[in-house]
Image (tube, rainbow, N blue to C red):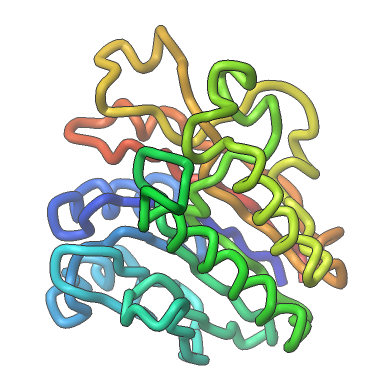
Length: 262
């Protein structure tokens, strides 16, 4: 069985429902994982997505904030979620395909502006969230699983436009990169995107503040696709749909794709 998967921080699924539909019709991934849906589940425009062939949805939502959803052309089973840091945030949901693959969809906290938990509670929240992810996967080692989402960290030097200039900027600080590496090591997760595209600058996010985002190209790779070692070699065809960042009234993130032969 071959299936394709995409992850996309949509920054309001209702505001950008037309962009989601455009992606579904033009790119047709079998599974689309969305983050920052900013909607209760019962307000997600599922009828639009069903009309495009995505009749299966597993989601967790809340009004105005966070929210994660898995849209699928393939049947999926809701296999729950975890409430990290006991905040009641809709930041994780999991679904299982009929072939036994479990997909975890995450929206890791952004972390605010200052990389210091003593003065910035949001940064502490982010670090604690990542620590709980690490401990969970250490305690319940996943198999035949894919982890995707906006992890809000660009770990490699070539995942940002300037490693030197962003070392003290939230999303690329050494402590965040270390915490993410611990999550990855906790289950031997393989960074599928970088397995397929091992060299060169690669971004999935460009700030709204930059009107000339494309020309300036000051991006960061915040959106990730990982797989457990038992299925990582089945992954291929990774890409970032950069063009989506230039669509009308876009999200500041672009979708990241991968294909799996299982």
